[in-house]
Length: 540
Image (cartoon, rainbow, N blue to C red; front, side):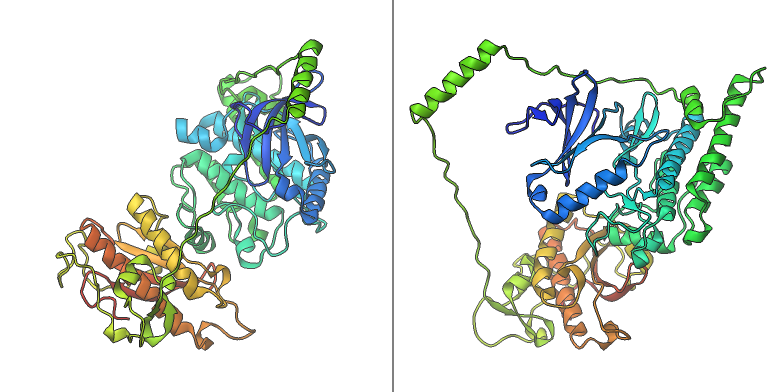
């Protein structure tokens, strides 16, 4: 949610429940958040559920439980739910409007927090989570986007996927909730959700606030998950006192993490010592309550947005508009909206590596360049040329953009360090590979039926990741009769795509293509790879 009030759009409501809508604050997967005024003139943030979700009985029931859970929670540095109507045609909930940037926006614009500001953030957010847990609720989505740096202090918001400690879930069964990088190791391993997961996310939050870096890096979700499960967090640059606390919070084992109440107590003591260091000894004792300490130490300037006033119409104006509307109906004034649709056709049959037949739609556009466009007997793998591109640049020597040419197998560490597509060329290649991989995986036992494409510039390698697979108890991919064909199909598409990119642009740096099978979030496997600059590199 943004603190900047945006203009209303066509179709936005004028009122939600008892509140007058004056603008927009943002929109997300669950609904739209409006800036609104109460009858007493109080500024409110009102979240209205999207119509498609409101029409689903399951979602409406979950939203009703969410409201009930959220109204349990109150405490320092929290934005509680003040009002709601889960049974309205468009369900909604309302909180007080909180001005200020979210933590991620502030860090991006102004850099990391330090000194009393950092200790205040740590203490305030820990106290908020302690209150959440004491109310029998788990937040489940602690992250910088859900912490507002308000003039009064850091404020934790958005209990949109809250979970009761008594087991009443407000999320769909089998759906992982949360944001990669802020999800605990046990949630990745078994789906376990508890207060310990919030503590883990708190540790990542404070590390990010102190350093400006994500403690487990960025990139594809599965690579981030791998680091969360197996790598140590990046805490360089943090002070020793907070670092020790954050390191405990980021423990891989939930039982080794401190409770949120302990975090709040220790951070409160650290903040109190900061206050004493700044103000010096005094006759009166220093305050120890988190709310008082936050008020003393929080010094971010207020940046109050302009709050638009709602439009007011006189009774005469409303009467005039009613007359005009009636006249329009009587006069049969109207218009007709015509919509058109377009479709695309798939190509004809082609050959996949290993002699397995597949359709041309199952290959990337680059791979289709290498497949026979004619109907007839399928080609075997050895019949497929390395590249059918007419480009004169094709040669046995590596492209000038690729400097490794060492035939070394890519490592899991290189895979974990790869990033999501950044340049337009990378995005285009990733899109083509995802589209081409879908038919190869369709109907197979691999979750999601899709691949993740990532790039490691320093390793000059493009990674195509798929899996995990679903196998009977005691079996694995090694018992899968179709495993080899699946890997070869993905490898062929990856090779052909990368090689075509070389021919189209000699500055394309990714001279290795690797297929990675993610057996679990913690155990990726380099299933196959090729150095794609040679003429025979796509013979898989």
